[in-house]
Image (cartoon, rainbow, N blue to C red; front, side, top):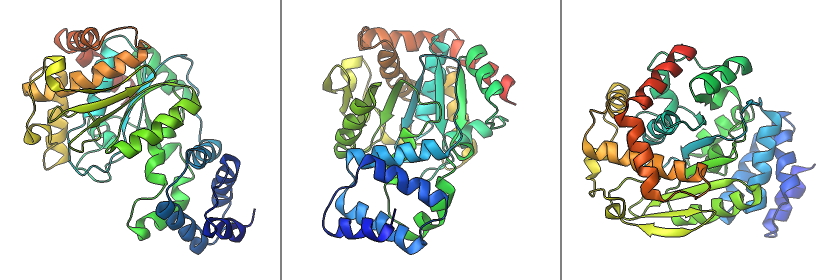
Length: 334
Protein backbone atom coordinates (compact mmCIF):
# COMPACT_ATOMS: atom_id res chain seq x y z
CA UNK A 1 0.00 0.00 0.00
CA UNK A 2 1.34 3.42 -1.02
CA UNK A 3 0.31 6.18 1.38
CA UNK A 4 0.75 8.78 -1.38
CA UNK A 5 -2.04 7.07 -3.33
CA UNK A 6 -4.29 7.09 -0.26
CA UNK A 7 -3.62 10.80 0.30
CA UNK A 8 -4.32 11.62 -3.35
CA UNK A 9 -7.65 9.81 -3.14
CA UNK A 10 -8.54 11.75 -0.02
CA UNK A 11 -7.72 15.01 -1.83
CA UNK A 12 -10.28 13.88 -4.41
CA UNK A 13 -12.83 13.43 -1.59
CA UNK A 14 -12.86 9.63 -1.96
CA UNK A 15 -13.71 7.35 0.96
CA UNK A 16 -11.47 4.50 2.06
CA UNK A 17 -12.63 0.93 2.52
CA UNK A 18 -12.66 -0.96 5.80
CA UNK A 19 -9.87 -3.19 4.51
CA UNK A 20 -7.74 -0.22 3.49
CA UNK A 21 -7.88 1.49 6.88
CA UNK A 22 -7.14 -1.83 8.57
CA UNK A 23 -4.05 -2.19 6.39
CA UNK A 24 -3.00 1.37 7.23
CA UNK A 25 -2.86 0.47 10.93
CA UNK A 26 -0.86 -2.67 10.17
CA UNK A 27 1.51 -0.59 8.08
CA UNK A 28 1.91 2.00 10.83
CA UNK A 29 2.96 -0.74 13.29
CA UNK A 30 5.58 -1.90 10.77
CA UNK A 31 6.91 1.68 10.39
CA UNK A 32 6.08 1.64 6.67
CA UNK A 33 4.95 5.29 6.52
CA UNK A 34 6.77 8.54 7.36
CA UNK A 35 5.30 10.54 10.22
CA UNK A 36 4.50 13.39 7.82
CA UNK A 37 2.20 11.13 5.80
CA UNK A 38 0.44 9.82 8.89
CA UNK A 39 -0.03 13.40 10.06
CA UNK A 40 -1.53 14.34 6.70
CA UNK A 41 -3.88 11.34 6.81
CA UNK A 42 -5.14 12.09 10.31
CA UNK A 43 -5.60 15.77 9.48
CA UNK A 44 -7.49 15.00 6.28
CA UNK A 45 -9.79 12.54 8.03
CA UNK A 46 -10.51 15.02 10.79
CA UNK A 47 -11.39 17.76 8.30
CA UNK A 48 -13.58 15.51 6.17
CA UNK A 49 -15.06 13.32 8.92
CA UNK A 50 -14.50 9.59 9.28
CA UNK A 51 -16.97 7.13 7.76
CA UNK A 52 -18.37 4.08 9.54
CA UNK A 53 -16.33 1.64 7.42
CA UNK A 54 -13.14 3.66 7.88
CA UNK A 55 -13.63 3.65 11.66
CA UNK A 56 -14.32 -0.08 11.66
CA UNK A 57 -11.16 -0.67 9.62
CA UNK A 58 -9.04 1.25 12.10
CA UNK A 59 -10.67 -0.83 14.86
CA UNK A 60 -9.88 -4.06 12.99
CA UNK A 61 -6.26 -2.99 12.60
CA UNK A 62 -5.80 -2.15 16.26
CA UNK A 63 -7.32 -5.46 17.37
CA UNK A 64 -5.28 -7.42 14.79
CA UNK A 65 -1.96 -5.88 15.89
CA UNK A 66 -2.74 -5.89 19.61
CA UNK A 67 -2.87 -8.44 22.41
CA UNK A 68 -6.20 -10.33 22.55
CA UNK A 69 -7.99 -11.01 25.82
CA UNK A 70 -9.95 -14.20 25.21
CA UNK A 71 -12.28 -14.65 28.17
CA UNK A 72 -13.96 -17.97 28.91
CA UNK A 73 -17.27 -16.20 29.40
CA UNK A 74 -19.83 -15.75 26.65
CA UNK A 75 -21.79 -12.65 27.66
CA UNK A 76 -20.41 -9.62 29.47
CA UNK A 77 -20.57 -5.85 29.18
CA UNK A 78 -18.21 -2.91 29.01
CA UNK A 79 -19.34 0.52 30.22
CA UNK A 80 -17.24 3.34 28.83
CA UNK A 81 -17.33 6.98 27.74
CA UNK A 82 -15.66 8.59 24.77
CA UNK A 83 -14.10 11.18 27.07
CA UNK A 84 -13.27 14.67 25.98
CA UNK A 85 -16.35 16.37 27.42
CA UNK A 86 -13.99 18.32 29.73
CA UNK A 87 -16.49 18.14 32.58
CA UNK A 88 -14.06 16.44 35.02
CA UNK A 89 -16.72 14.12 36.40
CA UNK A 90 -16.04 11.45 38.99
CA UNK A 91 -15.47 7.89 37.75
CA UNK A 92 -19.10 7.23 36.85
CA UNK A 93 -18.58 4.46 34.26
CA UNK A 94 -16.08 2.59 36.40
CA UNK A 95 -18.25 2.77 39.51
CA UNK A 96 -21.26 1.64 37.47
CA UNK A 97 -19.31 -1.42 36.32
CA UNK A 98 -18.91 -2.65 39.89
CA UNK A 99 -22.59 -2.03 40.60
CA UNK A 100 -23.51 -4.09 37.52
CA UNK A 101 -21.10 -6.85 38.56
CA UNK A 102 -22.48 -6.72 42.10
CA UNK A 103 -25.91 -7.39 40.62
CA UNK A 104 -24.65 -10.65 39.16
CA UNK A 105 -23.75 -9.66 35.61
CA UNK A 106 -20.31 -10.20 34.06
CA UNK A 107 -18.23 -7.12 33.19
CA UNK A 108 -15.03 -6.61 31.17
CA UNK A 109 -14.08 -2.98 31.76
CA UNK A 110 -11.64 -1.46 29.26
CA UNK A 111 -9.97 1.78 30.30
CA UNK A 112 -6.94 4.02 30.45
CA UNK A 113 -5.42 6.87 32.39
CA UNK A 114 -7.19 10.23 32.30
CA UNK A 115 -6.75 12.42 29.23
CA UNK A 116 -8.94 15.43 29.99
CA UNK A 117 -10.08 14.82 33.58
CA UNK A 118 -8.34 14.40 36.93
CA UNK A 119 -8.93 10.66 37.22
CA UNK A 120 -9.54 8.08 34.51
CA UNK A 121 -10.55 4.47 35.02
CA UNK A 122 -6.95 3.27 35.30
CA UNK A 123 -6.12 6.02 37.80
CA UNK A 124 -8.87 5.08 40.24
CA UNK A 125 -8.25 1.34 39.83
CA UNK A 126 -4.48 1.66 40.32
CA UNK A 127 -4.96 3.91 43.35
CA UNK A 128 -6.58 0.96 45.12
CA UNK A 129 -3.42 -1.12 44.71
CA UNK A 130 -4.46 -3.06 41.63
CA UNK A 131 -1.69 -4.33 39.36
CA UNK A 132 -2.56 -4.24 35.66
CA UNK A 133 -1.93 -7.42 33.70
CA UNK A 134 -2.48 -9.08 30.35
CA UNK A 135 -2.03 -12.57 31.86
CA UNK A 136 -5.05 -14.41 30.48
CA UNK A 137 -5.29 -16.87 33.38
CA UNK A 138 -5.43 -14.03 35.90
CA UNK A 139 -7.92 -12.11 33.77
CA UNK A 140 -10.20 -15.13 33.57
CA UNK A 141 -9.90 -15.74 37.30
CA UNK A 142 -11.00 -12.16 37.90
CA UNK A 143 -14.12 -12.33 35.73
CA UNK A 144 -15.06 -15.79 36.97
CA UNK A 145 -14.52 -15.21 40.70
CA UNK A 146 -15.25 -11.48 41.05
CA UNK A 147 -17.58 -11.11 38.09
CA UNK A 148 -15.45 -8.33 36.62
CA UNK A 149 -12.10 -7.94 34.88
CA UNK A 150 -10.16 -4.76 34.14
CA UNK A 151 -8.28 -4.43 30.85
CA UNK A 152 -5.75 -1.58 30.93
CA UNK A 153 -5.63 -0.28 27.36
CA UNK A 154 -1.87 0.30 27.18
CA UNK A 155 -1.16 -3.41 27.67
CA UNK A 156 -3.28 -4.43 24.70
CA UNK A 157 -3.54 -1.79 21.93
CA UNK A 158 0.06 -1.89 20.71
CA UNK A 159 -0.64 0.28 17.64
CA UNK A 160 -1.46 3.29 19.79
CA UNK A 161 2.16 3.81 20.85
CA UNK A 162 3.17 4.30 17.20
CA UNK A 163 0.82 7.27 16.76
CA UNK A 164 1.14 8.70 20.28
CA UNK A 165 3.78 11.35 19.48
CA UNK A 166 1.88 12.45 16.35
CA UNK A 167 -1.42 12.79 18.22
CA UNK A 168 0.30 14.79 20.93
CA UNK A 169 1.93 17.11 18.39
CA UNK A 170 -1.31 17.72 16.49
CA UNK A 171 -3.14 18.92 19.62
CA UNK A 172 -6.58 18.33 18.13
CA UNK A 173 -8.81 15.25 18.24
CA UNK A 174 -8.21 12.57 15.59
CA UNK A 175 -9.92 9.35 14.59
CA UNK A 176 -8.00 7.66 17.40
CA UNK A 177 -10.07 9.57 19.95
CA UNK A 178 -13.11 7.69 18.62
CA UNK A 179 -11.47 4.27 18.78
CA UNK A 180 -11.05 3.80 22.54
CA UNK A 181 -14.58 2.45 23.13
CA UNK A 182 -14.31 0.11 20.14
CA UNK A 183 -11.02 -1.69 20.85
CA UNK A 184 -11.76 -3.61 24.05
CA UNK A 185 -9.42 -6.59 23.46
CA UNK A 186 -12.02 -9.04 24.76
CA UNK A 187 -14.55 -7.81 22.14
CA UNK A 188 -17.65 -7.84 24.38
CA UNK A 189 -21.05 -8.56 22.86
CA UNK A 190 -22.64 -5.87 25.04
CA UNK A 191 -21.62 -2.25 25.59
CA UNK A 192 -22.97 0.89 27.19
CA UNK A 193 -21.26 3.92 25.68
CA UNK A 194 -21.44 7.54 26.76
CA UNK A 195 -20.89 10.15 24.03
CA UNK A 196 -20.45 13.90 24.27
CA UNK A 197 -22.72 14.90 21.37
CA UNK A 198 -25.46 13.60 19.10
CA UNK A 199 -23.21 13.40 16.02
CA UNK A 200 -21.12 10.81 17.85
CA UNK A 201 -24.30 9.01 18.90
CA UNK A 202 -25.33 8.60 15.25
CA UNK A 203 -21.86 7.43 14.22
CA UNK A 204 -21.53 4.79 16.95
CA UNK A 205 -25.13 3.66 16.41
CA UNK A 206 -24.20 2.70 12.84
CA UNK A 207 -20.93 1.12 14.00
CA UNK A 208 -22.65 -1.07 16.60
CA UNK A 209 -25.31 -2.14 14.14
CA UNK A 210 -22.58 -3.33 11.75
CA UNK A 211 -20.80 -5.13 14.59
CA UNK A 212 -24.05 -6.82 15.59
CA UNK A 213 -23.73 -6.34 19.35
CA UNK A 214 -26.23 -5.36 22.04
CA UNK A 215 -25.68 -1.71 22.86
CA UNK A 216 -26.86 1.39 24.61
CA UNK A 217 -25.53 4.86 23.76
CA UNK A 218 -26.21 7.71 26.17
CA UNK A 219 -25.70 11.47 26.05
CA UNK A 220 -26.71 14.20 28.43
CA UNK A 221 -28.17 17.04 26.42
CA UNK A 222 -26.01 19.58 28.26
CA UNK A 223 -22.83 17.93 26.98
CA UNK A 224 -21.82 15.14 29.39
CA UNK A 225 -20.62 11.86 27.89
CA UNK A 226 -22.68 9.89 30.41
CA UNK A 227 -25.99 10.21 32.19
CA UNK A 228 -25.23 13.10 34.53
CA UNK A 229 -28.82 13.78 35.66
CA UNK A 230 -28.00 17.49 35.29
CA UNK A 231 -30.41 17.70 32.35
CA UNK A 232 -32.53 15.59 30.02
CA UNK A 233 -30.57 12.79 28.38
CA UNK A 234 -30.92 10.75 25.23
CA UNK A 235 -30.58 6.97 25.02
CA UNK A 236 -30.29 4.91 21.84
CA UNK A 237 -30.34 1.08 22.01
CA UNK A 238 -31.05 -1.86 19.72
CA UNK A 239 -34.69 -1.47 20.72
CA UNK A 240 -35.49 2.23 21.08
CA UNK A 241 -34.39 5.85 20.87
CA UNK A 242 -35.76 8.11 23.57
CA UNK A 243 -35.16 11.30 25.53
CA UNK A 244 -35.53 10.88 29.28
CA UNK A 245 -35.89 13.38 32.10
CA UNK A 246 -34.26 12.54 35.45
CA UNK A 247 -37.78 12.56 36.91
CA UNK A 248 -38.74 9.69 34.57
CA UNK A 249 -36.48 7.50 36.71
CA UNK A 250 -37.69 9.13 39.94
CA UNK A 251 -34.41 11.03 40.33
CA UNK A 252 -33.99 14.70 41.13
CA UNK A 253 -31.98 16.95 38.82
CA UNK A 254 -28.33 16.99 39.88
CA UNK A 255 -26.18 20.09 40.20
CA UNK A 256 -22.97 20.26 38.11
CA UNK A 257 -20.85 20.50 41.26
CA UNK A 258 -22.30 17.18 42.47
CA UNK A 259 -20.97 15.43 39.37
CA UNK A 260 -17.41 16.72 39.56
CA UNK A 261 -14.58 14.36 40.39
CA UNK A 262 -12.62 16.66 42.65
CA UNK A 263 -9.30 18.41 42.20
CA UNK A 264 -7.03 15.40 42.83
CA UNK A 265 -6.91 11.68 42.15
CA UNK A 266 -7.38 11.09 45.89
CA UNK A 267 -10.62 13.08 45.91
CA UNK A 268 -11.88 11.09 42.91
CA UNK A 269 -10.97 7.85 44.70
CA UNK A 270 -12.92 8.96 47.79
CA UNK A 271 -16.07 9.60 45.73
CA UNK A 272 -15.72 6.18 44.06
CA UNK A 273 -15.39 4.54 47.49
CA UNK A 274 -18.28 6.54 48.93
CA UNK A 275 -20.69 5.34 46.24
CA UNK A 276 -19.79 1.68 46.69
CA UNK A 277 -19.90 2.05 50.48
CA UNK A 278 -23.35 3.70 50.18
CA UNK A 279 -22.32 6.93 51.87
CA UNK A 280 -22.11 9.21 48.82
CA UNK A 281 -24.20 12.28 48.14
CA UNK A 282 -27.69 11.26 46.95
CA UNK A 283 -26.98 12.79 43.53
CA UNK A 284 -23.72 10.82 43.15
CA UNK A 285 -25.46 7.56 43.99
CA UNK A 286 -28.37 8.34 41.68
CA UNK A 287 -26.05 9.11 38.76
CA UNK A 288 -24.34 5.74 39.16
CA UNK A 289 -27.70 3.98 39.54
CA UNK A 290 -28.92 5.55 36.30
CA UNK A 291 -25.86 4.54 34.28
CA UNK A 292 -25.72 1.06 35.79
CA UNK A 293 -29.43 0.58 35.10
CA UNK A 294 -29.09 1.21 31.39
CA UNK A 295 -26.10 -1.16 31.32
CA UNK A 296 -28.22 -3.83 32.99
CA UNK A 297 -30.99 -3.23 30.46
CA UNK A 298 -28.50 -3.85 27.64
CA UNK A 299 -27.45 -7.12 29.29
CA UNK A 300 -31.11 -8.07 29.54
CA UNK A 301 -31.61 -7.36 25.81
CA UNK A 302 -34.21 -4.75 26.69
CA UNK A 303 -36.49 -7.35 28.28
CA UNK A 304 -36.60 -5.50 31.62
CA UNK A 305 -38.00 -2.01 32.05
CA UNK A 306 -35.60 0.72 33.05
CA UNK A 307 -37.47 1.03 36.36
CA UNK A 308 -36.75 -2.64 37.10
CA UNK A 309 -33.12 -2.16 36.17
CA UNK A 310 -32.77 0.85 38.49
CA UNK A 311 -34.02 -1.29 41.38
CA UNK A 312 -31.59 -4.10 40.50
CA UNK A 313 -28.74 -1.56 40.58
CA UNK A 314 -30.02 -0.06 43.83
CA UNK A 315 -30.10 -3.46 45.50
CA UNK A 316 -26.50 -4.07 44.42
CA UNK A 317 -25.37 -0.99 46.38
CA UNK A 318 -27.80 -1.20 49.31
CA UNK A 319 -27.07 -4.88 49.95
CA UNK A 320 -23.30 -4.35 49.95
CA UNK A 321 -22.85 -6.67 46.96
CA UNK A 322 -21.24 -3.98 44.82
CA UNK A 323 -18.69 -3.24 47.54
CA UNK A 324 -18.04 -6.94 48.14
CA UNK A 325 -17.49 -7.40 44.41
CA UNK A 326 -14.94 -4.59 44.38
CA UNK A 327 -13.10 -5.97 47.41
CA UNK A 328 -12.90 -9.41 45.76
CA UNK A 329 -11.64 -7.80 42.56
CA UNK A 330 -8.89 -5.93 44.44
CA UNK A 331 -7.93 -9.09 46.32
CA UNK A 332 -7.48 -11.03 43.08
CA UNK A 333 -5.67 -8.27 41.20
CA UNK A 334 -3.33 -6.79 43.81
